[in-house]
Figure (cartoon, rainbow, N blue to C red):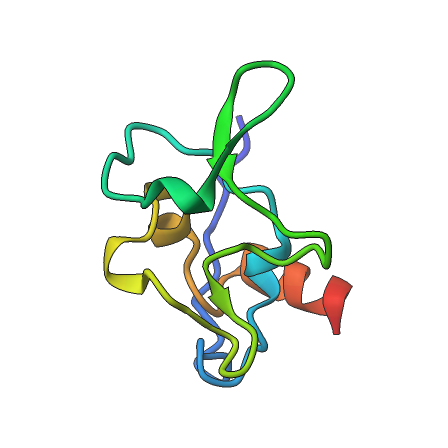
Length: 96
């Protein structure tokens, strides 16, 4: 059995300096009734997710500030994505 040690978040990375790299990921919705309908899409498999526009960014992202316009009511999966942790750093490296 392998023990997986979770690394500490990189405190240099914050939502204010990251350029919203995570907002280019597919964000599946799981019982997220607070998300406004205009930001939701259903794929060909019948799964609900955050709508991504033609430019690849989440529809809830303000392109001028690169901040989430529904941050206080963002989906569960977005809340679970922790800034500065390994998954965040990987996505950031792929997009920067």
